[in-house]
Image (cartoon, rainbow, N blue to C red; front, top):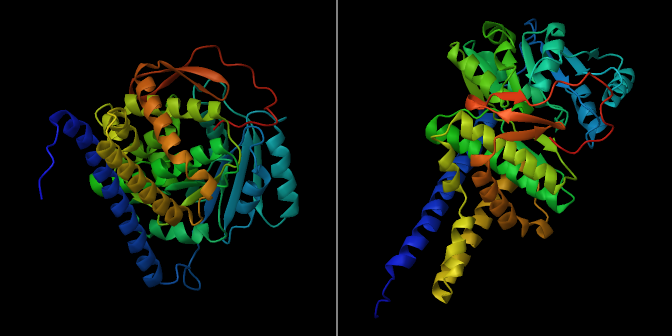
Length: 408
């Protein structure tokens, strides 16, 4: 059979697609292998409950609140239903008029047996408003393990039982959960949830196995109180935009071990806006670029679909067939990983948004190289080296929080 000559220029266009797809396939295989290994581990693990007479591990959950996220009451209620004792829930907001506190109080009345603390205070001088609130919540923590958890997180009743055994090793200072996002009902929400699952679970697992890199997300960040005290609690991350990652690095440098949990943590996002999606991803990309500039270019390696655009522009059927094959392979890999990680199928009507999501993320990657500011919680910050943030305007006086918000 006569061979078809390959144009050198087209070969240069094809190569990045195939390399990127191969890298994505490697990440997929690592994530699937990790899931399989964890399934075996869970089957072999002995009952993690302490033996009769042994003290149970006390857990304090810190929940910073700011306005009413969608599904907020259901999310908070899931923490009241955790099957673990002793358990302390600490809710807080910067303003006593924040409507989220009313929901927390209502749930506390429904569960009178729960140990609940509600705080309405925050230090407005702290550049990172979430950390300013967390510093008000932490002094109320009474147990040795502290879970830092956001308002859009929903847990299963056995979540603590699945994570706390990792602290059996006394050298482990922090356990973090890979994050998956579920519940999409609109296209922007599907794009956001797919991207969150891909970056904060799928690629996070691959980075840990392949490069030994811990990518910690505050959606499910469990820390030993002793380890937190060793790094000065939250003082070292007051001006950090990526406070979750920075706090994990401080714990690691203090000599404590970090460990990924075998249990995923779920965030619920049913509706979203394109504006919120773009703003959040520009902020996160800008922070990643400033925190680790040498690794930032590697993100392009795990996004095969945008690399097919030059092939489609070549105007040749054989090359277009290669592009179509790359897109199809990427869709299959992401859909299978998403199904296994989230535990729920992606509705077929949302499958076409995967290429759209990848193209938007590709564009945000380049824009973030030149962006000097980011918007977060209706405020604008200057992005500084190392992931620090500086408010561009004076901190406003604490007032009532918005009744509804859609931005993370």
